[in-house]
Length: 314
Image 1 (tube, one colour):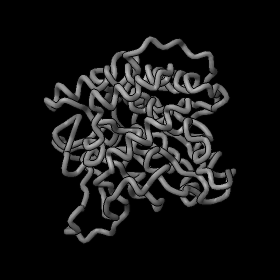
Image 2 (cartoon, rainbow, N blue to C red):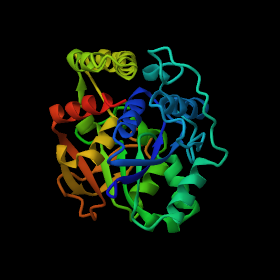
Image 3 (tube, one colour):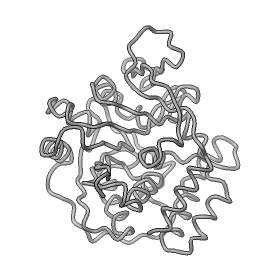
């Protein structure tokens, strides 16, 4: 247990967020989840903070601390994705309302206080949604940046360009100002962009493997993904759809499943056409200093073997 990775999960559940949280909670020998901070994103904060508690209860972890963070981006109106995730954010299965109470402390303050009260470089921030909570925390208490071990986030794209606009991936587009704060921070950063998550395709066979676990969690995961994946199947004209956020937790568990480059990544915050674009200098042509590990490839079978095996623990 001495080598367990301490993490805070910052999230906007979202079916794929739910699977990511379940993967973390199914890996207690390697991951110690100190708390979950909800942010507005896929659906408004009232629902993301509710959904995080639903997921904890599904995993039999009502002891986990769940906090509501920011209800809107730093400088912009909120953009949501009910067209993908449904009205609740977890459409698909019939899920009970959570009995867990939301913590009274603001999620940003939890991030700050937890980083301050722990030894430096011992806590990783796992960001599954817009980066508002982390951007606000770094602005409010810049001294905590030196305390973070690393940030692992799902967001952005280069070769795959955008999924919410022609140029921008959803998590970054919702709050590009927060993303710029995080990318400009001195913290070690690993980015799981669409370039890698679009290779992690939930085929019918892979989703049936979740259902065939013959557990409530396996059935719920299969039903959630059947709902959320329908949108991308239609959009891309594909037989399968990408699974985004679990890549963050899989990277923490088995980084050797992934490969990428240490490059410069900047965020477009001004242009009307390309707002939220991750300008990733994959070919090293800008002369700008590298600031992030940008993941480009993944062992897909290894990923799904890990995910299916761990979900069987719940």
